[in-house]
Image (cartoon, rainbow, N blue to C red; front, side, top):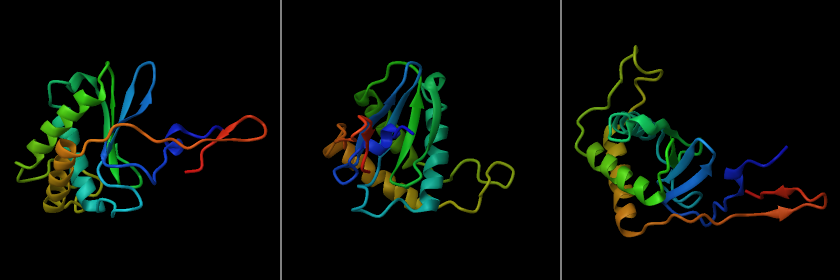
Length: 164
């Protein structure tokens, strides 16, 4: 089996920022890395769930709504993925994300938190979500990172193996 691209990223050198995770012919996947993997705590599950609801709501109601395919958390809870159509670059995603985070900081409730609209409607934490968003916003403004460091080992058979 081929190693998937995200497993070729050196997570010991990965800093909070925005990265192009995948660039396919129809879609571009952005890695919105909120915390530093393996060095800082992951985003708490309830805060990440609230962030997902809020970010998805903002992006799907923004000026780029027609290009938004997916907004959702990473399994490791250190960031979010946003999949877009169109030719967006990291700087454009940075500006959009900063607008989104500023909007989240003004919200008094998380959308779609009823049993009818959410599969785990009790698992939300808006105050902690805002704390994470505030910290991430400051990082995007003051210490921006957007270039991955990759890992590669070429095996005897010529296949590339990622040691992630």
